[in-house]
Structure formats: structure tokens, C-alpha cells
Image (cartoon, rainbow over all chains, first blue to last red; front, side, top):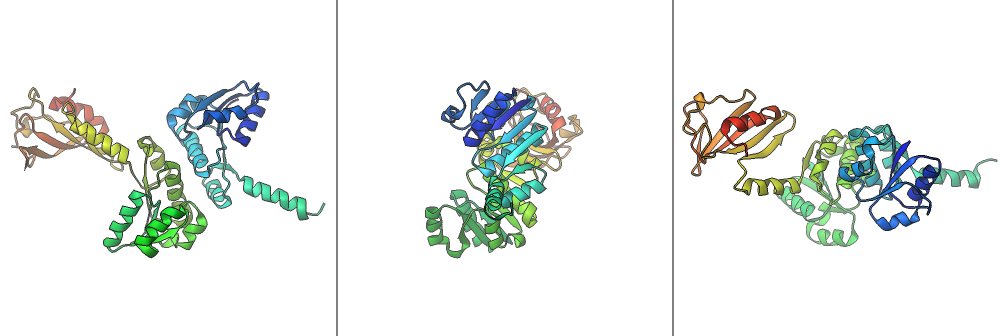
Length: 134
Length: 220
């Protein structure tokens, strides 16, 4: 699959490396080109410095040919907007969006976006680890 | 009207001041503490510290009874989310967003924002209309009707110079609104004559633009 990832922080760089190793064609976008240093040294994908809500940057990253798009910058709103651009304008089939704020996550999930809230997932895991019956 | 404004920069500040003067109930949300203090010193309770993207903040300021929500932060993604959350969660009837990147207009309208305002685009079109070479200047888009208001400057060599309007074959999809000659306005009746250097204002749909430009000899 051809996959575009927006955001090369801890999650973005780890995800990009995993997908690359699994044999997918990966392009990562980040504001700062320094962020790309987080990628594994044998990462074989492409890196594009730029603003992920700018259509031209997304086109340069190959969004038109992409099968999937993941938005994992640390800005909820940036992820939301970029995901909606990928889905509504570029008709990318699989779009997954990270939203920290659980309320915002719920709203956009209802609006039809595929969303992951690390806050909710993380809290649930802690809850289970602390008090859930074994 | 109850109007909530997200983003207390210069645009948000002047917007709040003007709308208050007009007698509206206005609430300005600013998340930065230093900026909030400065705004609060002048505008008092009309400013609340908070993030207009946050559902809790919006609930506290009574977003569900707001008539209009206006998002004017410096970030397009924040403005988009402010408007979408207002529409989806609080059923706000009218949302207006400031666009910093004029290219975002399409996605905003597609995603249900009622109105977008792009200072960048406005300044661009002002610059364009100031260029002596431009004879066909798009002034405004009426998106619901698929129409544009355009300004045509009649060049000396235009084939319609000296003709009366009834003798000019206008594209079916266009309508002349006004002629300006030497700072005077002339109504475009059938007997009105077109002179060189007239400024003609027309309503036209996108398909008719090129034909209109051809008839008026304003193609560059």
C-alpha cells in the first residue's frame, strides 16, 4: 500500500518505520525537517517537509495516489483538517485521525471520520491495569 | 443577536468592539492569558478566557443559544474546528471563518462552514483590479447561485465601443448591472451606449465569463 503519514513525532516516526519494514510505500510529512531524524536509519520511504493542511504539500507527498492517510501531529485541529482534506478532496479510501481531546474525538467520529483518541485508549489501559478484575 | 467570536487577535478585538457598539450581545474567547488580560482590561466581561475549540468552554458560554459563531484565529485548522464543533454540537445556525490560506475556501465550504472571509484573497483582488492591464476583474462570488460579479474596463479597441446595449449580443447567462463613466453612473438601459474606458459591472455565471469577455473585447 501507498501510505502518507502526517507528523513525524514519536508516533509518526515509529508508525512510518513499522509500515516501511512491513513492505509498504511510506511518505512522511512534517513541519520541521529535523523531525525526520527520529526515523530509523534504514527507513526507505520518502520525507516531505511542509505544512500538512496545505494541499500542495499533500500532493507533493503523493496523496492523489495514496491508499491510506494517517494524521498524527500533536495538534488535534491540524489532524482533523488534514484528514478531512484527504478524505473529502483527495478521496483517500482509508483515513485515520488522532485526536487527543475525547469530546472532539467523539464529535468527529460521529461526523464519519475514523478517529483514535490516545487519551481514551491510554486511560482505559491504566484503568484495566489498576482495578479491572483479572 | 448573540455572537460568539473565537480568537482575540486584532481582527477579533475590532470585531467585538464594533458588534458591541451595534448593540449585539458579543462574547470573545481568547485562550492566551496575557492577551486575555489586555483584552479584559478594555472589554471587561465581553471577553472570556478559553479555547473556542473546547466543548466545555463553548458549553459554559452558552453556545447552543448563539445565533452566529465567528472564528478569526490565525490558524485555519482552528477556525475550521471552531465552526464545525459549533455547528455539530451546538446547532449554531450560522458560522463564519477567517481563512488565512485562500485555497482553503473549497474545503471549508464543502465541510459546511456557511461563510468564509479571506483577507489574502481580498488584498489579491484589490491588487489585481489596480493593475492597469487588467480589464476583467472578478469582484465577488455568489456561491449559492454560481454567479460572479465582475468589472469590465472597456478598451479603446473594443468592438462594442459606440454601440447601444440593444445592439450588443450578450451571452445569455450574463446581465449588466451598472456602467460607470467619469465617476458618474449610468443605468444599463437598451439605449445606453458603451464608450471606451467605461467601467461596466456585470453578473455572469462561470460558463459565460469567457464569452462575455470576448464580446466586450476585454480578453488580454
